[in-house]
Each structure stands twice: as structure tokens, then as C-alpha cells.
Image (cartoon, rainbow, N blue to C red; front, top):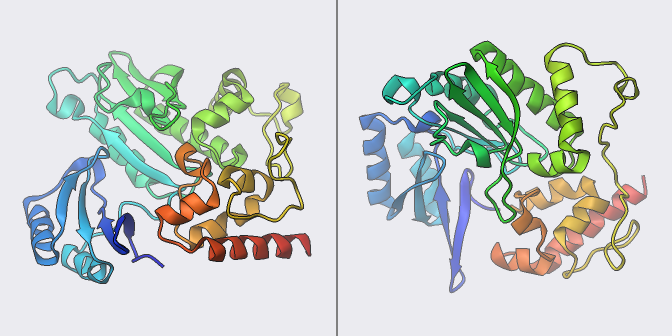
Length: 320
């Protein structure tokens, strides 16, 4: 078990070091809070690191010191678990920037309040930019908004990970309330229909045209009670999707060479097992493409324990 609210960073000579990342909505931090960061780093021998998600990480910590760090900070972790809304990155917008067209801080902070840490099929990152310069990197966010003279343009499906994907423009020229309602529609549709996959992978699987039509029909209040009436094939959760020859098949047990993505495809009910071992980054191409022995080594786990727990879960499901 890893310390609460901490992420494993490195394993050197059998010794593990951890990092904590408190939640800082929009990257705004008061001087007294900043002093507590410095005090915690000094007291527990940590190193401060500014993150790409507009936060301050304290890394290089020992497991036994993590609880003391949180007590000194008096703050909440930025992440509840891996598959959730991870961050809402926002630029200064027209509040602080001469080029701002819209109030990125107002929209971004409201999105943070509504969605931060909400559980999702996979991780979600949001971006809000007050002008087309897109300093909040909207085009590589799962859900993003860019301010223009006419309002907010909405983008979906971006990712800057191991398999980068530029976001697709969904709709343009929305006011603040419309932008928030569109965010709700996008998140709800994704949560209800996606598998363990990032937004862009979900969109590519069902086709951007289908995604756009379904989301816009909901946004404009034209959703039909049955997807067949819209002529669009909604994606469905499956436990036995077609697999490539040689991959894990339904009924097979797993071993240390089994790839995580294959396990999730055939046995999606094993997600809680992975999480219990601290392997929460499901849906991330880098992690799900790893065999179990590699993932175990990276996280300092005994692969035999992981295999045993997964097979026990698979047998239990098969016997029901």
C-alpha cells in the first residue's frame, strides 16, 4: 500500500520515494500557503517542482513522512485516483492578459469546482484559454475551450501522451452558460458510453461524426429515447470484443507476460484489482501496453501477488 495522497516516484536500491501534489485551482496560491510548501520541503527533505498542471509538487519524500507533510500543508491532494478529471488548466484570460477575449479564469474555476476528481472511464484533462493563442494547450486536452470575440469554441479529444492526438472542434461561439452546459453533456456522454479509454480514443472508435451528432442532439435537447431512432450506433461496453490472434481470450487465466490492455479488454471487472495495487493509470497507452511483470517492476510490486489477485478475481467472476 502506498501512502495516502502520494505517488510513487522512484525506486533506488530498493528504497522508494514519493511525491505529493496538493490541489491548487487555476494555479493560484496565497503567500501563506506558499510558505507552508517551503516549510514542508525543508522539514521533510523534499524538493519543490512546478508541474505542467499549474500545481506545486513536493517530491523526494519517504513513505513515513507523507502524513506529516499533509498535516503541515493543511491541503487536499490534487488527485483522488487515476481515472478521474485530473486537472483544469487555465490561462489568465481577459482578467490579467491584454490579449484575452474571454474570462478564462471564471470558466476554468467553475469547471474545476464541478468536475475535479470526478470518476471517469479514464483520465480527463481540461483546458481553458482566453484567446486563440491557447496558452492553456487546449488542442491537447480531452475537453477544452478557446475564447474568441464571439464567445467560447469547444474542442474534444486532445491528448499529448504516448500517442498524441489534436482535439477536434465541436462547436463555436457559446456564451458562459452554454459552455458549461456543453461540458456537462460531453462529460456525461463519455462517462455513460466509453470503455477504459481516453476521450480521443473513444471518439476515434465511434467516429467523430457520430460523437458530434450525439452530443449536439443532447445539447440542443433533441435526444431520442432510443439510439436507433437517431440512426447512430452508440458504443457499448463489451467483455469479449474481437481480439488479435495470440492475445488473451475469454476464459484464459493471466500470467506475468500478459499485457494489461488485453486484461482490461477481456476482463473489465478487474479494474478495482489493479487499483488496489496502486496501478491506477488505466487508459493510459504507456501503462496499459505493459506486461504485468514490467508494471510490477516499475511500481516495486511482486508480480506473483498481482497475477494471483487477478486470476482470483477472474475465477470469481466466472463462477457467478
